[in-house]
Image 1 (cartoon, rainbow, N blue to C red):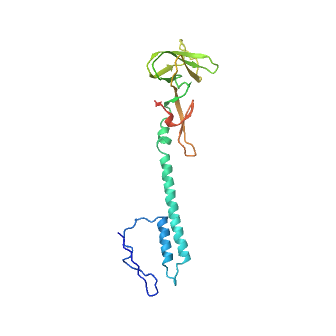
Image 2 (image 1 turned 90 degrees about the vertical axis):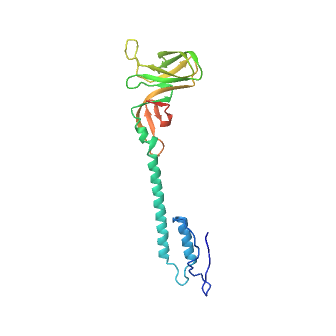
Length: 219
């Protein structure tokens, strides 16, 4: 509870009362508090000895500088927070690993292997995964056989029956006889890009750039 009393002198002007406005304060002085104090100071100043203008300007400059420093510190904290986690630190540790992303284009890894995942909404039979080159030629056919609903992994080492490399180009993934709900392929993470505008990091692969959240799986 706060008790307020007003004491005036013979001229009717308020004078200091040690028992006035007894209570608890906030314990901090922000810009709003400073303006309140400044207003009170001007209101109750001695008319014969008014507050010096230079003093008032100095006080205003001090509170402005303090506010600016506080805002700058908060900005630095926000920047430090953005530079942690998946934006840069965690994402950088993914370089050299492979990520599974939603895509119908398959690219070989360092060993020349093409791999991906087909997701079926229901059990299926007779499905065929085809890897097709830029000219429309089917380079490799993979019989899916009988598959339950869910994910099915496909794999090709990029070689023919004699062990010779057939291609190292990017190939389109097509599925015949069944309709998958998702086609995804594996791609090696070559680099991490941290945009200058402060947005989330991008993982650079032969398939393009992706956000860390785009990874269905990582290995």
